[in-house]
Amino acid sequence: MKRWIIFFGRGGTALLAIGLALLLASLIPTIQIIISMDSDILSRRTWSSGRTYEGVLTPQHNLRFSVTANATLNVYVFEVSTQTIYSWISEHHPDLIYLPLNVTYLEEFLEANPNSIGWNTTIDNGNIEHEYIPTKITNATLAFSNPSLDSTSVEWQVFVTGQVAPVTKVRSLAQWTIPIGFVLALPWLTNFLRAKTRRRSSQL
Image 1 (cartoon, rainbow, N blue to C red):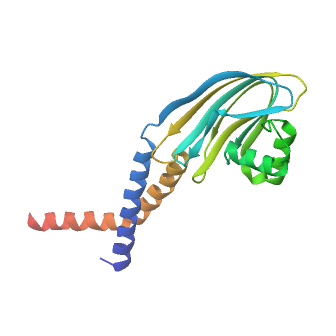
Image 2: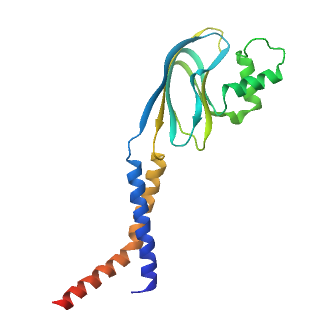
Image 3: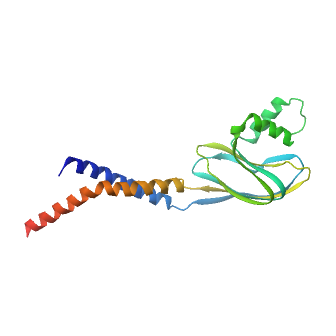
C-alpha cells in the first residue's frame, strides 16, 4: 500500500473520530438555572443594576434574559461590575454624596469606557429576549437605564445556561471535520477492504 494512502488514511480516521466526538458533545443537554425574576419602577433619568444579574461568565455559561418595559428603556450587558462603574464615577465626581444613579454619570462612564459594553439595545414600550455568549471569562452585569423624563415599569427574567461546549461552534466544526476525514480516509479504507477480500479468497 502506498505511503501517502496510509498517511492520509490515518489523518482522515483521526478527523472522523474528532468530528464524531464534537457532534456528541453538542448533543449533551444544557443546564438552565433561574437567577432572577422580578419587576421594578425605574425613576426618570436613572439607571440600575445589581438586582438583575451580576457575576462572572465563561463561554460555557451563557446569560439568557427577557425584559419588558412600558416606555423607553436602554438595556445593557456590561463586562465590568457595578462597583467598577461606581468607583469610576466617584473618582471623577468626588463631591457626590449619594449613589451616582443619574443617567448622566453612566453616560460619562460609557463614553470614556466604550469597551465595557458587551451588548446593548433599546426597548420602546415592548419586550426583548437575548442570549449573551461571552468569548472569554468575563464579568457580566445586566443593567437598565431610563433616559426619559417619566418613570418606567420594568419586568425581567434572567437565566444562566451551562453547557459542555458552545453548541453552534462545536456543530460547525463537526460539519467540517467529519466530511473531510471521510474523504481522506476513503482510499485507505477501500484498499484495506480489498486486501481483506483477497485474503479471504486465497484461503478458500
